[in-house]
Amino acid sequence: MNIPAIALATMVLAVSASPALSGQTTQRLSATKANDYGVVYTLPSTAIDVTFEIEKITRTHGEFYKYAKRILNVNDPIVEDSEEYSLKSILLSTHGVPNPDERYLVKFSPGSSIFMLLNDSDIPLAINTERTYEPDKPELPEAVEPEPSPLQSPAARQVVTAEMLQSQSSLKRAQLAAEQLYALRQSRSDLLTGQADQMPPDGQAMKIIMDNINAQEAALTAMFVGTEQRSTEVITISVLPGDSDFTDRVIARISPVDGLVSADDLSGVPVYMSYTIKSRGEYPVNEKGVQLSFPKNGLAYCIPGTAEVSVSFEGNQEASATFDVAQAGIVYGLNPGSFTHKREPLYLILDPATGAAIEIGAAPVSK
Image (cartoon, rainbow, N blue to C red; front, side):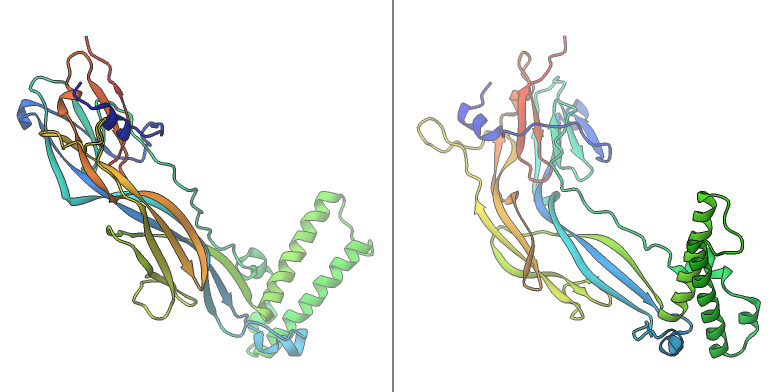
């Protein structure tokens, strides 16, 4: 088959291939007379994806915040609207981006039935098989929308009386709201102690009434103390490192008032990335330890290296991981004839994030 045993051992990793995910766009290209039995593809560089989970707190002042201390004896109402952002978590992953310096044309024997799968960036996924490799990805957090505040509930409309609407005095409206608030609390106390003039007929009716009282009380209270709503945003940025180490590179910033901002926006606190190559890809050697040469007209793939990536914020390391990366690797090649052999053609599955050979084996032979 013209594939040295040591090269084959270097190429095959102990990782199983999985079927292509439905979200992955693939194109199937065949080597035909129309394209002179050649296929053009691009090997990837490995980009580092940094996913930020950012919490947002939205504070809104109530209509009667000026009277919170005077009427309800509340010392710390919200007095102005604001938004505050903070970091909850960071997750790391990788994906491949086409490397324009690693573009290849591979030619196959005329009359062969070989085909290649490429993604929409022309990065090779597989040869002679429909299966593709999908590396494990961390489970990313989901964005969370804010829950409606008490002032956005139907109960908030129920507690606004005609007298409150007609009054031109904010102090008078605040006093009317406070009177309603105290009346609701008294009604709840009467229900709980069984002293209400009309008690609910059963437990379900009691629950409905209590829920409505609680919602109206929350709305009236929010008119004085304000509201606080929490939500989360999930944002991913990609960093494309080169083939050398770096330490504490600013990749983004987090502003308490604007959330995630660009690295050059000095309103935010910097997020740092460090990148350290731990190993580099090596050319395969034969039984005598002599480096093997690139096969003539070889089908290029990557033997990646590894790099350790860490991200820190405000002096704390928030995430770290070690990844296979194409930039720390070397490009080697396979004999194209191995995939068009009449009796024993091979199939190959590659990693779209690195261009590495993941799985190789005997392809089914059509009869």
